[in-house]
Length: 209
Ligand SMILES: [Zn+2]
Image (tube, rainbow, N blue to C red; front, side):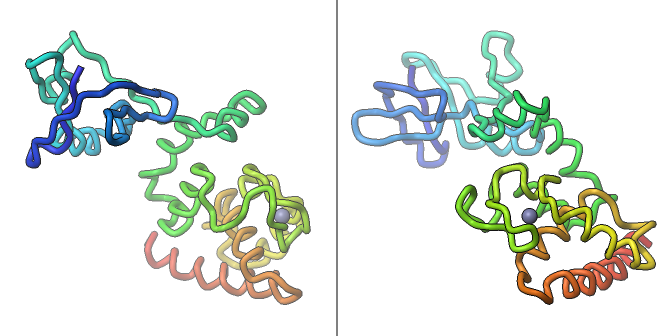
């Protein structure tokens, strides 16, 4: 089997090995990302088809034709990290379903949405399992800013005093606020967070109309 990467360059490689767990194939010189990691967002599938061709022997096929053809199937899955697998086993939480639910949900403020997608990707600017949450004092694990922080309930009480909280606040905004609180840190952290969230709620009211 041969893959070509990037039609314009037209480079062909002859794989000598593969590891689908990490989505890599390799030839005698280099490693390559394989095309079996494809977003569920259809636009990105189109983008990918511009890049990849797949062939066996000297017969090549563009990936979009592969997708349409019943002869070829493409895995519409991401590779899950160990933590994402654990969420699923322990809590039945499917981060990919959650991602689809949230990613294009315009009722969630963009700032919160993007932050939350980083949470789902375990991609916050923090050293997981090493750094300590400055709101609750516990070591931060992968679930910490997805409702796991014990300081969240207390912070919510403060946020509920904000006039717009009832209308625009919610679970994700609270979790985001917990993160902001950690970022501010210190004694003033909670007060600064409440002020900041108050300002954001005003902005979001403008956006939401
Ligand atoms: Zn915490």
